Length: 486
Image 1 (cartoon, helix red, strand yellow):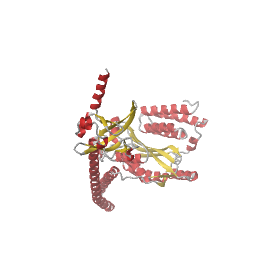
Image 2: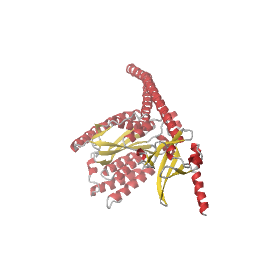
Image 3: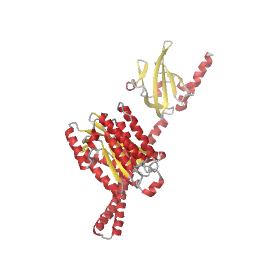
Image 4: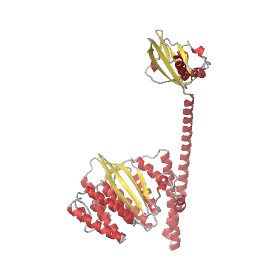
C-alpha cells in the first residue's frame, strides 16, 4: 500500500504542467519531474546531481557551501526569470522557492511555470493596442477633417438661405427656405454628434467646472425650449424645486448639452401634446448637491425591449424611427457618457403610444460662502420673470405641510381631482393636480415624485395610470401625515 501511494504521488508530479525540482542545501538536484526534461532537453539522469544554478542563472548563489537566493530575490514570492535549456537557449518562466525540514534534513523545492505563451500573448496584445491607437488617431483626424469640410458648405447654404428669407415676399418660397434652414440645422446636429462621439471615444472630452447661476441657466433653457416646442405647436412646461441653490459649480455647457439632447429628442418624437421638464434636489452633502431632472413627453413612447437599445452608439429603438425621424443614434449615447462624467445616472421609461420619460441625475458643487438671501432673490427674480405666481390664491397652498389647513386643502383638491377624472375633464384635473403638488412641496422626495408622476399621467389623459398614482400619493400621505385619510 505504501509503495502504491508513492507511485501515485510520482504519477501526479510527472504529469503536472509545472516543472518541479527538489534540491538540497548545497544546490544539488535530487529529483525533477518529466515536465522539466520535456522543456529543457535534459534527461533525468543528466539533471540528478546537477547544480540548480545551471538552470536558473543569476537567481541562486553559493555562500559558505550553501545555496541561497540572490539578494534581489530574497523577499520575492514569485520570481520572473528564464530557464536554460541543454542547448544553452532559454525561455521565460515564473519560479517559486519553498523549503522545509523533514527527518532533520532541510529540503528545498523549486517550481517553474513556462510563461512563453503568456509573454507572446502580451506582446500581441500590445502590438494590437498600438495598431488600434494608430488607427483611432487616423480615424479621429479623418472625422475632424470631414466634419470641418462639411460645416463650410452647410454654413454657406444656411447663410444664403437666411439672406434670401429677409428679401423674399412670396409665402411659398419662404416656406421652401425654412425647409432648407431646418435641413441645415439637422445637418449641424449630426456633424456635432459625430464629432462629440469621436472625442468621447478618444477620451478627449473633459468636464470644465466653473461657477454659474443655476436660475440664469434654467431661464436660458426655458426660452430655448419654448421656441423649440412652439414651432411644432406643442406646449412646454417647466417645474423647478425652490430649494435648489442659485450659485453652483459645474460644467454649464455639458449640462446644457444633456438637457438639449433630451428635450430635442422629446420634441422630435412628439406630434401633439406637450413636453415637460421637472428639476428637483435629490441630496445635499457638505458642499455638493445632486439634482434630479425629468424630461416627459406625450410622443411615440417606448416598449420595454426598446430601452436596452437606447443608450448604445448608432442605435435607435426601431429601424423605422431612423427612416421617419432621421438622426444618427448618437445623441443618447453621448448623453449617457456626459451624465456619467458628471457622476450621475440616466434612465428611460415609457409605453408605446403613451409618451416617455427620460430621467437623469448630476452632481454639482456649491460655493462655500453661499448667501441664502441672494439665493432667495435669484429664485424670486426667476419666478417673476417666468410668471410662476399665476394663481391669486397660491399663498393658501404654502401652509405648513401636515397642518390642519394643509390637510383640509389636500382633501378638497383630491375630491375635485377625482370628480374631474370621472368626467374626463383633463384640463381641470391637471389644474387640481398642480395644486396638490404645491401642497405637498414640503413633503418627502418620494411623495413629490409620486405627485409629479400623477400629474404627468393626467396630462397624458391616461385614466388608469392617473388613478393608480393618485392612490399611491394618498397612501404616501397617510404614512407621512398622522391621521390623514380621504
